[in-house]
Length: 132
Image (cartoon, rainbow, N blue to C red; front, top):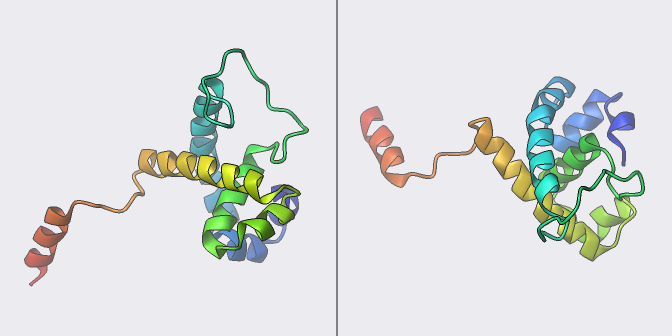
């Protein structure tokens, strides 16, 4: 599955990711920043990088747009990893590695953009008591 093909059909992009074209494109620079920050220091398996690496075209998910599409479509549609991996021409263990890695990048991106839900139960209780 390639973002280049899917972006032409806005309904399909919305159903796969929950994002419109404009939202996807606005989200992409921050996601790209966090990906590059991670990938410049660590390998895909999480080991500290010893030498400079370049994004290879032979990678299962070579473009940053495809990486974002991969994780958003996985989280929205909740497919079996075997099925999702087959969509991207990879095995289930490879899909599992990508899901865990890109999920962490996505959380960092959401945190940077201030889009993570508030987890402070005391603040939620305070807001709820103010509404009564």
